[in-house]
Image (tube, rainbow, N blue to C red):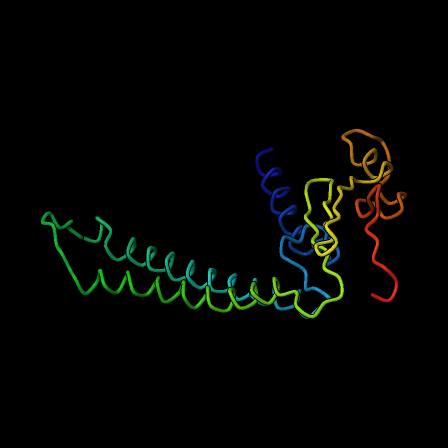
Length: 185
C-alpha cells in the first residue's frame, strides 16, 4: 500500500512537470508584456528587478549552504567565542547593498517619471483599479466617477454560482459605467 502511494505521488509530480505550456499559462504569476511602449518599459524594469533578486537569492543561499557544509560540527569546526570586529567586512556588506539599491532605483525612477509626465496630451484620464471596481478621473476636466464590475461577471464570479465564466462575454473585463474617450482624441 505504501509503495502504491509513492508511485502515485511520483506520477503526479511528473504529470505536473510534463503538462502542456497552455496548462501552465493559466497559473502564470509573472507580469505580461504590455502593448504600449510605456508598459513594455515597466515590464522590462520588473524583469530587471526580478533577475537582480534571483541573483541575490542564489548568492545568499549558495553562500549559506557552503558555510553550513564547510563549517559543520561533524567536520571539526569550532565556534569562535570571542567577539571579532572586522571593519572591512562591515563596509563591504554595507556598500554592496547600497550600490545594488541605487542600480535598481535609478532606472525605476526614470520610468516612473516618464509614466507621470502627461505634457503634450490632449486628454489625461487617471484610472485606479480596486477589487471589482474602477475609478476614472478626467484630470483636466475635473470629472470623475466609479464603475463596478458588470452584473453578469459579478454573479458568475460568486462562490458556488454554478455559472460558466466562458459563457459570459467580457468576463471580469467590463464595468457598469464604461469609460468614454471623445472621438478624435
